[in-house]
Length: 611
Image 1 (cartoon, rainbow, N blue to C red):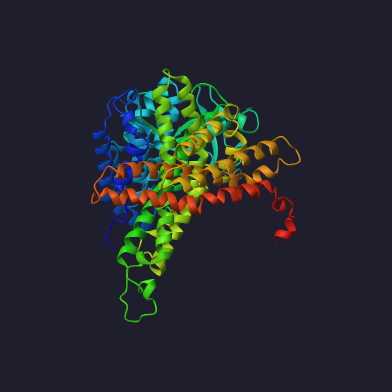
Image 2: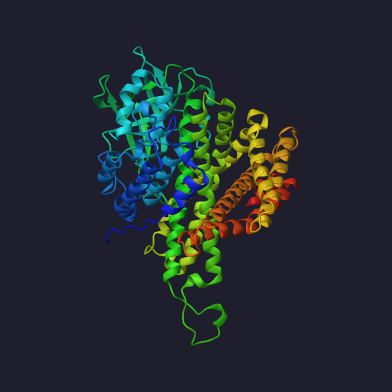
């Protein structure tokens, strides 16, 4: 089968969010983004889109069909991936967001996030290989010793080495504190590592010269649970002090995981120290700091998962839209009883239009939520040391939005792909179109990097109470300010009212959770309702940002002539916001009533009754 690019994207949409909604221009040309202007940013977007469509997109389907191979204990990635890896790093796509003083290009996180979305959307399985390398390098850069930074950062940033995150073990699963991997300190300061890890993305491959594993392990005699875990740099091939490669480091691929999707991505079970020769070095100089160090990488990964979700969902939607505009079937509804009526494209049918508008609203709203998080990160960085109060506000919003971005985007990606298949009908269920692969690939997003229930518990158990609840208060105040400003908007006023009611529902449910946390009798209601609250808060955020887009679009459209091509684009913003406000935001208050109802049926049902 000939290699075909099936990835679809809208550069106009990406430019709108970055420059019209998030006003990236306000940061460009100023510290720490001095070297960046709008022209440079747009050039990067166009180059990334070209690379994605010409190189990565055609390899997506073939990589899915071919998969990975384990030969002689080494993993072979699908054909074409190695050349794509080389081109990726030669083009500099993976160093965009790395600070200049570390050898990167110092681009804003919002811009580098859009680049990651494009790469992930074109070929998610391929994007998994370099995906965590930057995060692993960032962890070493933040916590490592000067010698570790000298040996590992440049090779990882240049693509000579790749990086992984090794947490999960067969018996522990998400219970990281049950880790059994051991670390025994040697006289020379290194540690002998022994144990096994599973579900390791890019755990082995032939794209880079070396793979640098960041491994959670327990030093002999360390406390039980997560407080006794340390983080170790464990390369596949040992790295000498001068940076040259030494001998193999007793890291073996026990097996390749057979997965539902992402067949082109090597997910490995790894065995460390089966022959007693695996050496690791502690990240930094202090033991038992593995979890806070790993969370640096985890938060990077959670944003990456959110980007993967919207990337796949967006291409699924745009493929469905393209199909609906071409496929003719049935007459117009007004003439459905007329046998002589001509067939129309299915985009003319009301239910198909409903599905398309639903996907459009969710994709564009989720993207805005993810890039809003990235913009908060950029502004916190820019304001650090100049206005610490504002910097703290922006960093607080990053903390609050992270579980929403990871969970809601990943859950919705799978649902949006399912809707896209429905638009295509029987054709969507075949491999003639890419959406069946998108559906299979996207399911894991809600599982890895902390299941979505873990994210929900992080939100209600930790994030809502950070800074004494100040981050949540700021979030709700921002929405209330928007409501006050636009509640009488001639076209959007009713929808803004729906947003206000959703905001009140979320605020009320947050108080309910606080009350439960202070009551031993009701505390177990928290995990039973955490996912529902995360959805509520995510839908509130998406609804708010879609309405913000609609306001901006309306003002921009009013300045253009009636025939200007952007008129249709801006009209799409209005209708996406109205649809979401009328069909999704009202359910936030419904969910709040369910939370307040304190249903205990899932808690009280006997185990035997479930069977």
